[in-house]
Length: 228
Image (tube, rainbow, N blue to C red; front, top):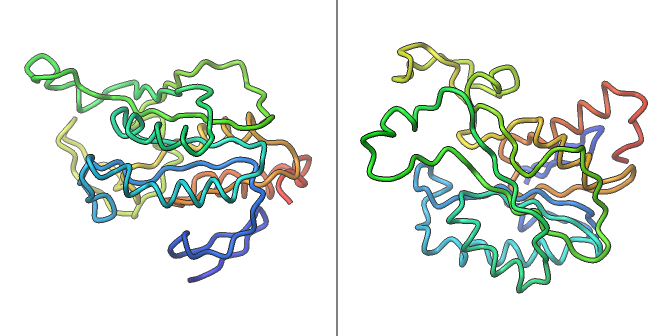
């Protein structure tokens, strides 16, 4: 396991279940497999999703502070299968956040002939326990942002160009197929933490929250003590 020490915290490169973590985290963002069978790390069937997550959610719960928040991302069916386990572990659902992927979306091309409603959303269960801190920014539980144009400037890419069938144009090849906007990381961190609190991200992916925290730490001196 490799350990990377940043101004904003520590990244453990490897199996997070083996990382030497100290309990007491105030917020966690969980964005693991969806059971879509589209990538090597996501090959479990949706029927086995809850069983796969169970040990991960148990360890997560053991590391969280008595009063804390968890943001659990998945598609709608995946979240529905994980919700009973979260409740059994003592978490209370605060809000179901919906990411509405606005703008031109490939899923809508066949909307009129498709045998079902095209799914252009992802959901995030915001769970709380104890007297968890929360201060929203005035926005609702529907977060609208396009997966293509609105995120172009903040996506991490491989540096290669790939031709997409939609629009017949060359596009930057994303480094990670399920990357979320940095705006969402900012919104969650600002709403659920205060200076000095600790954030846990068990499935790092492209480390968008770590990226946001690092920017916050280095580029905004007035917030330099935010994540010590």
